[in-house]
Image 1: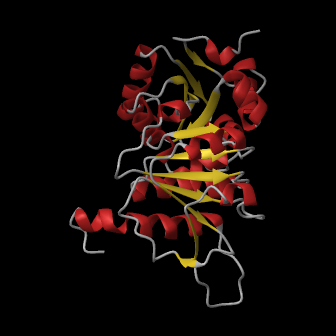
Image 2: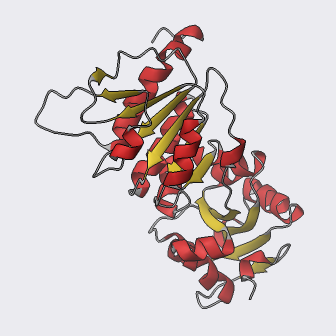
Amino acid sequence: MASPIAAPGRVKEVTSAANPIIKDIRLLEKKRHREETNSFLAEGMKLIIDAMNAGWRLKTLIHAASAKGNEAVTALATRAVAAGADVLIVPERLLGQITRRDNPQMVVGVMQRRFADAASIRPGADDLWIALDRVRDPGNLGTIIRTADAGGARGVILVGETTDPFATETVRATMGSIFAVPVARMTAEAFKGFAGDWPGQIIGTHLEGSVDYRVPDYASGPILLLMGNEQAGLPADLADLCTTLIRIPQAGRADSLNLAVATGLALYEARRHAFAVAGDPS
């Protein structure tokens, strides 16, 4: 049976949480339903506009009834209908139930999921990609995608069973970068084949790494930055794929860094030569 989300081009006022369209949208909190409908939630008018400008498909636009007179919201609703999306006008309390927030954004969108084609990745000499092995925490993944965007990484590769990049918590943590950074996914076995054909360096963070993360010649690319799971780090079979294993020195009692923090440090060190070439004194 087709999802109610899929029916395009309608403008409708909805006031009840029992409405089947609202019930269907609320189910997007569940990974299985996101996969079945190929959909996810994005919150905020700017995010939705940025997504549409980047070519992402908006399936349904939901906005608060109190925003009816807002020119920007009206313009977005008109654009949504022209693009074939539904527009739902709902009370603010329904927006709160959809987003599970006490103070929700006045505009929410149901977007179509989109993954990058792993087989089409052709890294250039100055490119850097981030590969994440079995990342579990939605906030970590969202922060890494946002950091990848800020740091100039070409994309993120999810290896093995990972958290969903289109989970609401992850999308929030990306602050819109989910629409700018290509995200591909591979099984561990497929990634081994991919890494075997990588034309440049594969640099992995590892507790047993003997090289300080500031030492490698990151100017010799392309770079594949491989980060391990939050709890277990890189398994031996993936660590063996690396041309260099690096460590991030720590002066305190902590024996490890948060994955998103470690990824950010390694990414910015790897990209430092690129920033310098571009004229950034940092």
